[in-house]
Image (tube, rainbow, N blue to C red; front, side, top):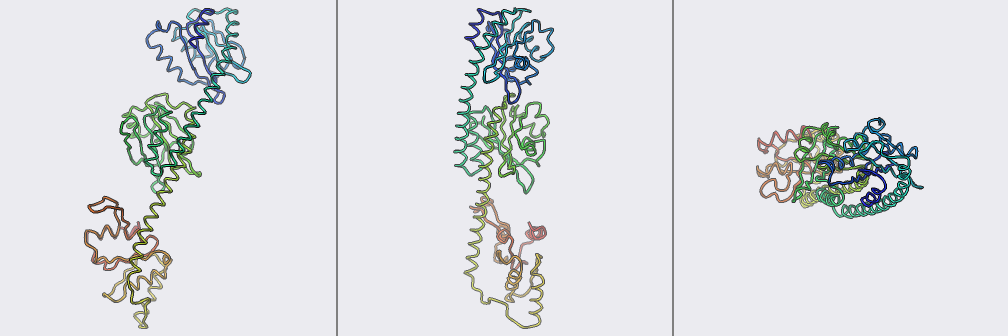
Length: 473
């Protein structure tokens, strides 16, 4: 455009030369470039205003672009004070010192490109001869701009495909969510100017969103974790759950979010947010969130690319969650295997209950009555009278017989370890907890748990045990 300005300045009077491009898919016009003569003499702040204008996309009918492309004729406005069709454009020209302008359609045999506009500070500056010359120039500019756009489109398509390939190769090599978040952020940072990348995952059991945010502006790339509230319209991820399509939030839109979200964005200086749903196998798993300090970040063409990337991320997240479930089941099966191997090694003198007394027959009738239910059963008797055999009989006759029968002698467990044995513990929960341990309640899931000598449980543990037995959780 600088070379074009130098050539045209010898033929036509103008202070500003503007190229506006037409987007046929969205039916919008965007100011792409503006060249001002004697730029070093321009008023202070003019460049900033022009840059802000260039980030604005307007409906094509609100600009001279729409009229020029529809009619195929130049739009000549000898005095902007008399023009009422394009108030936004006219106001911008007036603020930049223009009093007269002419917008010429850029059209080739293959597409409608946009307009080339001349503006000057002198009213009624262009004669019909000037406008005819401008039209001849516009025909040549249209071909050149089309060739440039085609070249840029091919370059962008190549870069986008390269990015998608890199992200795909990166995602398939990670199964942990935190590792996925870091790898996604590194790939996106090479193309997008965002400072924060976040993943929010939906937890069906609680109906809540769990957020993990990576701060890219921090050299250490710290990950912040927190649990968000229920899915709602006052969170970026909540908005995409129902829509199932990307949502871009600007400064004015952020005011409608939850207070804790507004506070976080304000503290970090973030002014634009792009939230994309992660959809896999027809279900929304959560959202991919990018935030930027640039108020005009995430234009539509970038959102289209991010939408494709979100599809890849959704598959990776789905695989990660499935992997985690498999790991949990694997650990549980390993614990059950160890327990059952220990049970096999235990010698039982009796394989069944044998007897003909009336008292034993009454007990067996009670066993048959209670076995089909899921009720908690209290078995009383002296040591050696066969309480465990009765418990096994109840288990074998119940619908739980295909699952584990887990027993625990409460009297043989030290007081400080009884809670860990019953409820389990996480790694590092206390000194000596070098690995995660499943409790007997979890081992007996969908099966039966026999607590022998339950009366020996410490008093402080009894309310917790009662709560578990009552709520069955």
